[in-house]
Image (cartoon, rainbow, N blue to C red; front, side):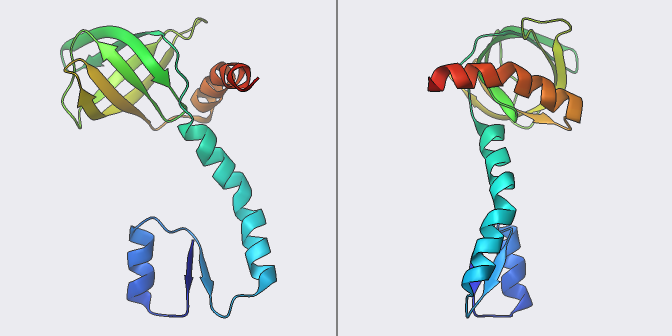
Length: 150
């Protein structure tokens, strides 16, 4: 959120580019702030759930071009996973991942490698998840998150 007294379009463009989603203009009205907080609360909670990482080990199979990599998840979130595999793909590589969520059928998605560490570990972000895929991950992760918070 950006609070500004400026009405400069270049400033607004730079702020959006830096990740701002909302603007309030000075002078600030108390009711405007409360309305913004109410309007953004659900989206903020959704983003927190999306990036909440749960330490869980599931079998994973990764396929990119002709390469097949097997391994296990070190953690999992609705946004992606951190994987230890038999090998690693280069940063930026797009792959198809199949994760055994201990239910049938396995979870299948496209994912992009965002980082590589220790030679065989990869941080991968899921791409173009459908509503069904997101719900499936939420249904799998929610009991693990709740058990952890008890």
